Every structure is written in structure tokens, then in C-alpha cells.
Length: 147
Length: 147
DNA sequence: CGCAACAGGTTTTAATTTGCAACCAAATTC
DNA sequence: GAATTTGGTTGCAAATTAAAACCTGTTGCG
Image (cartoon, rainbow over all chains, first blue to last red; front, side, top):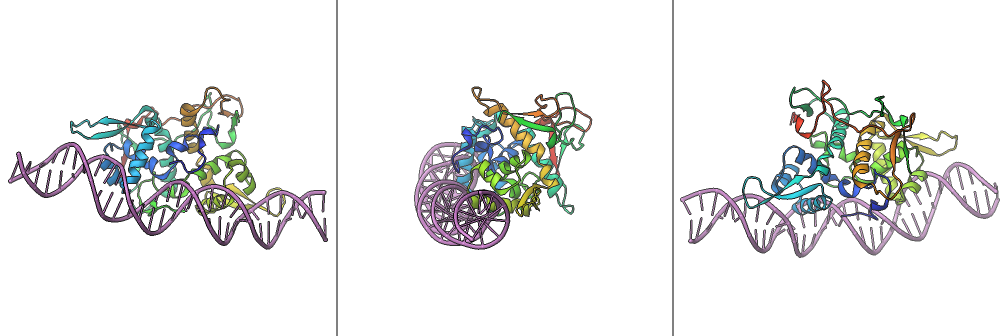
């Protein structure tokens, strides 16, 4: 799974999560989970990836406590993969990725895929970083300390 | 670069960016750029990755218009890699990744690495998704339309 | 019940990617 | 102007990924 000397020892909080979610598929699997997928077959059909790869990825995500395996809710003997709290906390990250994608990769000619407020049906606001006292912060307004 | 039948044709705005930034190193390179790295050697020393890999990644990032190559600001004959606007717009994504990492992967025993407001020195607020009219939205309060 | 089809994987194998090391040309330093 | 640094490229071995075949337990159905 780990492609090189893993990032576990990198103190940077940007680097360390990459062992868990730093590959192509993991984020897409999590995206699908947010949209309701739970079963192995659902993920596979939706993503069109090889079963062994999905198997490996799910195992890794479970090992990193992003999914848990639970008995299927519909009473069948199969299991389902459900997001843990840690997994659900990836929501802002997925939204950030989605918004960036919407901005730079949406074709004008094809139906626009958008994230909307379920209650009103309106598109959500753009994510924005704010200071402790509420000012809008850009890349140059912040520093990383503790490095 | 592209590991499989690329995501260019996937209509989902989560999937399409992955051709550009969906691998381990690209995000770390971009993180370094936000922290001031510009030259090939800076990235390499900071990340400790092989030169051919860095070379490939930078080429890909330039191809995706996330970096541009510019003559070095300090007057030397070398070039430097500088983030485009598209690249700088990845800031919220990096912050989201960082905040998730801070929450789940920070060792209590080692110096905490934190993103702080340059002006006040205080930690920034958590990113949060809000509806058009300002309500805080979680994963279950949103739907993707246009799929 | 009995059998076909399906879910959820594992194994095998081939192709692709990675990472290390060596090499090299241009620029810079001394 | 010789030595060193910068910014790469190339070749090769090792690791990863992907496709396909295979296998086992479950479910649907007549």
C-alpha cells in the first residue's frame, strides 16, 4: 500500500494523512460513500475499478478507521462499509476538491454537477478560511508554525 | 502519469481534478509552494524525492496550469516554478487536508504544527460549509445534482 | 429442496510506475 | 578556468497496479 518510506514520520499534518487517503481511488470511494454507497458491489459498479484494487483500498481505509465494516442494514448476510466519524470529517476536504473541480473542470456544454443545499436546493457557499476574529484569509495571510 | 483510463471523461468534479493533483507528491509540492518554495532544488531537498519523479510531477503540474515556469526572480539564469491562480485556488483544499490531519494525526508529544493567522498569530478557524443563507451544512444536508 | 445466479472477494500474471544511481550539460563560484 | 552546483535525463531493478480467471458462501426461484 505504502509507496515509499511512508509519511508517518513527517510531522506535517498535510503529509501524514496521505498514507490513508493519498491515492486516486480512496477519495472517490469516500465520495461515493457520502452519496450513499455502502456495499462492495456498489462501489465497484460506480467506480469501475478492479475488484482486487477495491478490496485493497477498502481494507486500507478500514485499517485507518475511515470506514467500519458493519452487518448489512437490510438484513442480508453481507457486510457493508460505513464511514466512521473520522471518515465523515473528510467532508470539507471533499467539498474543497469538488468546488475547485467545479471551477476549473466543468464543461459548459454538459449538465453541470453541483452541490446544493438539500433544504433550499440552492448551491452552497464557497468554502473560505477565516481568522479567529472572522477576517477572510488567503494563502499569504497565514503561516505554519511548529515546523 | 495517468494510471488508468483517466478521469477526464468522468463528469464528477471530484474525479476530474485527480488527473492533475491525485497523487502523493503533487499535493506536497503544492504545499511547499505555499510555504515559499520555488526552485527545483528547494522542492527536492524539502521533500526528499528522486529527481526524475519531481521532474515528472512538475511537468504534469505545469501542463495542468497549476504552476508556471518563470525566469528566476533573483536574476540568475535558472527558472522557478510559481503557482498560477488556479494553483493558488487550491489553498482551501490544502487547508482542509491540513485541518483533518491536525485533528487525527498530530502526536501529542511532538511540537504541534499549526496554521496561524500571520497578523495575530492565532490559529485559524475551522473550515465549514455554509448554505446560501448562512446555515452550517453537514454531509447529510447536501445533495449533488446534475448527476 | 435443488440449482442457477450473484456478492464478495483471492490468486495469477502482465503491464505500468516508482525510486535509486549514474550520468550530463549549462550556470555559477572561486 | 577549474571545480562545484543546478536542473535535469537515462537505465535498470523493484514495487504497484490492473485485468482476468477462479473460488466460496449467499440468495433467488421454480
